[in-house]
Amino acid sequence: MIYKETIRGNFSKHAEHYDNYCSVQNHSAKRLISKIKKDGLKKILDIGCGTGNYTRLLREKFPEADIKAIDISSDMIQIAKSKLTGSKMEFIVADAETKKFDGKFDMITSNASFQWFLNLEKTLTKYKELLERDSVIIFSVFGPETFCELNVSLKELLKKDTSLTSCGFVKKEMLKEILEKQFGDVFVEEEIFQEEYNSLLQLLNKIRYTGTKGSGISVGNFWTHKRINELEEIYNEKFGNLVATYQIFYCQGIA
Image (cartoon, rainbow, N blue to C red; front, side, top):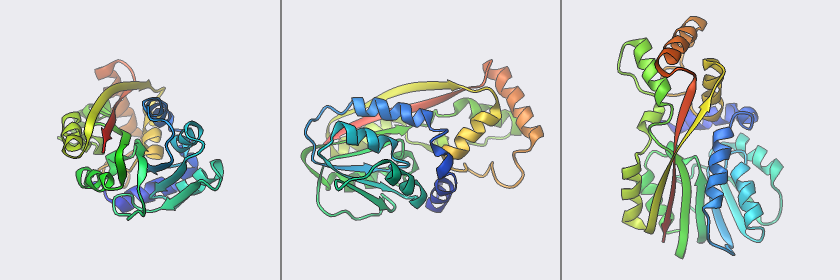
C-alpha cells in the first residue's frame, strides 16, 4: 500500500533534485503531448503536475487555454510556478484524488502520476463528471513491469518473495477495463522504455529522487555499501548490464 503522506513527503523532500533525474518522465511527457489530437482546448486540468515540465508542454500547445495544475507537494508546485506564470495559469496544492473542483474541463490529463493513486477507478469516475461532453481524458502511467530487473535481483539477494512498490501498479488489461466502464473511444498503448546505468547507485538515486521510498526495503540501514555491491553483482549476472525497464501506458477516453 502506498500512503499519501509517504508520497507527499518524498516528493517534497527531493523536489529540488527532481529535474536532474526525471528523464523518463520527460520522455513520456513528450510522447503524451504528441497524442493529444484535439485543437482549441480552453479549459485543461493537469493532474500531478510536479515541477511543471509536462505543464509547460501543455502551455506551449494550447497558449490560449486556462490551465489548472495540481500536485500533492507544495515544494513541487513552487518550482512549477517559477517556470510558468500568467493569468491563465492556476496552481493548486492538494490531493487530486480527494480535491473537489468547480466547473468543467475540455481535457483532464496527467503525466506519470496516476500510479500513485489509491483507487484509480473511483477517481476516474469522478473525473468523468468534470468533463464536458465529448471531452477527453488522456494520461500516461507506469505499469507493473517497471523495474522488473531490480525486483528479480532483490528477490535473489534476499532469498524471499519481496516486491517493489512498482509491482502493484495497475496492469494494462485492468486499465482498459476501468476506462471502458466510463468512457468511449478508449485506447491503452504500451511502451517498453529502457535506460542503462553506470552503477546500481545511479539507478537507486533515480528512484529515490523521482518516486517514493518503496515498500519498506529502503528504511533503516538496508542500503549498505556491501548490500549494494552484492545486488549489483546479481543484477549484472542476470541481465548482463544495469539496464532498467519502464513499462509506460498511454491511455485515452472520451466522455
